[in-house]
Image (cartoon, rainbow, N blue to C red; front, top):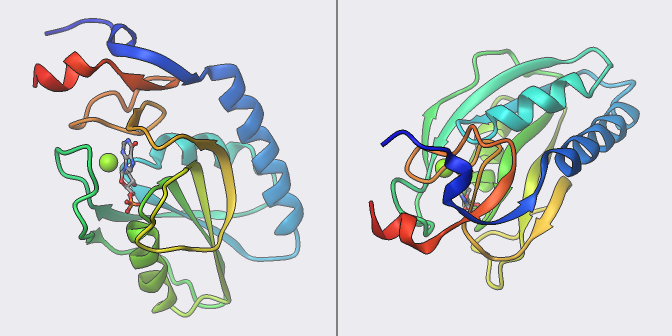
Length: 185
Ligand code: IMP
Ligand code: MG
């Protein structure tokens, strides 16, 4: 049962140093773009929690944090085609400049639903930010994702907030699981 999760990876795509460097760059870019705005970061639970906690500390200008719950994958590694909002934001977003923080832009369904949900709160602006941009051939929703950390191939990845069956979120790297890990579950 208990073992080192790193041993389950067949390949590491992004190591800690690469992630830290890129998140710092993103924070600097966002700070420059929002220096005269009223920024609120809205993280999407649960995958964006790790990225959000690093990104917020890389943004030295005043801003607020909130969270929204969304669930699309269940236990599978293939997008299931529907998105459930499990909890809405609690902050008043009127006249705020919202930046939605997501772990990965895959089919685009989650970000599309979350963006519409945020829109209903009448913020002054909404932009999207994803830590990973998956190179998907045929996306369900093509969105204008203003910020992303890394482009990755169309593979199922875990770590830095991304899970397989609710594990691996705590891995400090992003990697691809060995095939036998799926088969043993
Ligand atoms: P989308 O709605 O298909 O864009 O998928 C978004 C959600 O699916 C993300 O918030 C992730 O939770 C999950 N997801 C998509 N691709 C991966 C992956 O490669 N590994 C782990 N989770 C993923
Ligand atoms: Mg997930």
